[in-house]
Length: 140
Figure 1: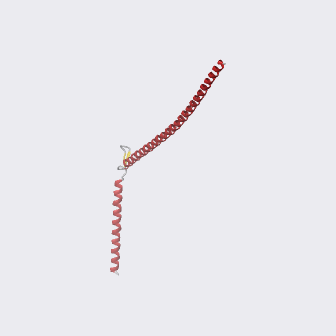
Figure 2: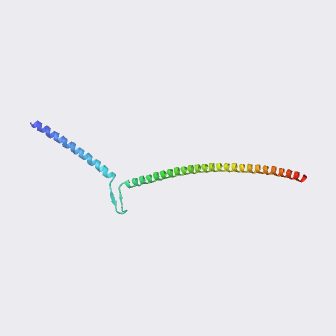
Figure 3: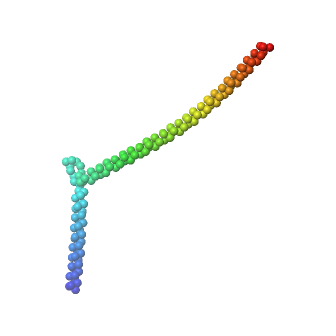
């Protein structure tokens, strides 16, 4: 019985030692964490020093702003390119329409000229016929 009690006590002692060691390790880890992010009041400056976390946050914010600016510029570039393409298409469409109008106008002018020439020719023939008739009439 004494041996059993001694063994139990030894086991309890071992468990206590293990628990103490674990507690010490946890405390050491917490101390390390506390050291990394210790918040100190620097009343002379009036700011809280948290070992560079604010600086890192500020750098990240600046990086995000920079990335956003780049994205905005890319979007503006794409929009500008799309506008240029759309304007070019509109101009081409307008030019094509104008060429078609010009072609129709030239065709109409050509038809009008042909009509005027035919009318002129007809009038000339009539005049010659009238002159011939007049000569014949005078000769009678």
